Length: 254
Image 1 (cartoon, helix red, strand yellow):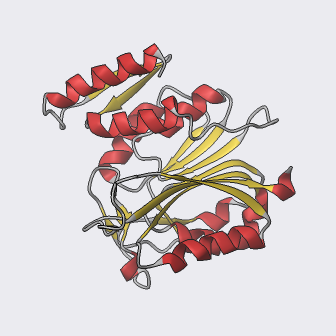
Image 2 (tube, rainbow, N blue to C red):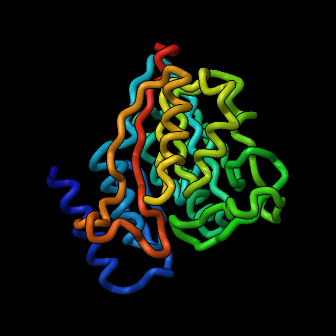
Image 3 (cartoon, rainbow, N blue to C red):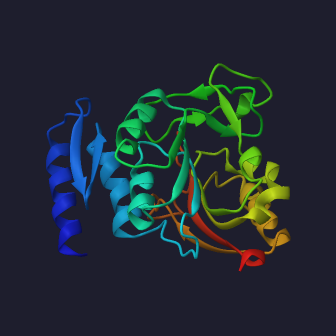
């Protein structure tokens, strides 16, 4: 690990040990400032996004278009802007507390459009569980019922070439991506954080079958290795048993 990563993570750990998860704090990442409340979430995002470079992609565009679905507090937005300063970003985040921090972190950049909406398969609103952290999610068990949180149909935003589509929407990704099937050919690079349960392998198969049908290449990494002894216990009570990072490249766009 590079020294700069060690130092920043060490500082965040010290703040986290203080037990203060409510007051506003700021940390410098490169030439950008990240405003946050919960150090543990920033450490997790920093490791995945900045240290490991999970969202790094290549493009020939001078002003790549990036759609960030599930932008949380904006760590991904900061990373994308550091990677491509002229990028045009549309970032979606429905959680009120997360959106406030996302707005603070987006202020230092230009060409960013923020949408306080849940990405879904229609624009009629959704039932949404706000937690003020990374686990906020649509109540997909109530997907037939509209709710009080505004929603945005992702399909409507894919009528043009998209250089990067990031989808981290806590279990709603399968419905949303199948709804976008006829327009995914416009997406060059796609990152999906898949959320599933060990007893529902058909969900993952459904997603991968969509990629195969559309001739989309994919590479899978484990996102959360929570079970050291899967044969003993592969069920996580109160959470997603299976969390995978899926990196996709649309062959038709090459």
